[in-house]
Length: 215
Image (cartoon, rainbow, N blue to C red; front, top):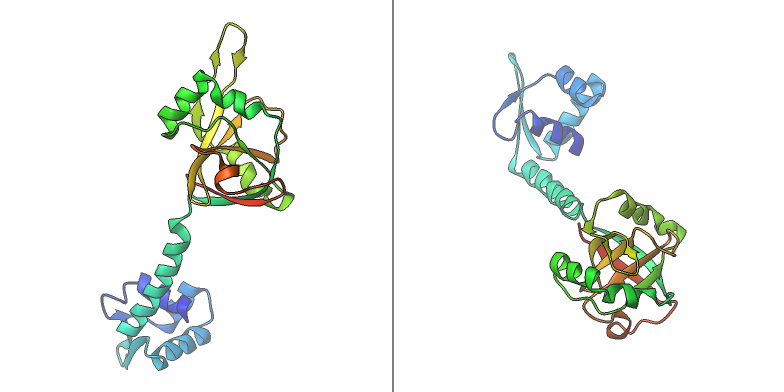
């Protein structure tokens, strides 16, 4: 019934009395004329539309009860799509190679993190191993631009570009960082934050963590 009610609403039956035949409705909803006629009768019986049959044709208008049903449906979809730009990746904590502390502390990166992410990162990263079933959203990060942290040169070497994505871990603001050059495989993410996440959240190797990626 909701599909038919929506079709009538799209034909402006919430704002005016709509003249429509069962044949016209059937074409709109891709059903038989008999089905369209039956659906109209059901909507009428439920008090979702008011229907009048005259010698000039069939007239329908969506009632307040029908509007309320459509509005509840709208709110459901609103809740679904309001967070469309955000998603969650779940991973398992593990001890990294210790390189995170060094790279995050480099002035060339640190200054950009402060300017572009809005916080001074704790010198170290929280490392998460992403299981196979979670890789759909991990792969999305590779496809997206993110926040560009420029590479830079020192006398000793060249440091590559880093892509960052704002995130939350248990309500704590941070960022996923994906270096252009890394020793880690694709099923690993590194997270920086203004605090040491392991200590603040009491995390140990093997603990599961949900990361809310904010687009």
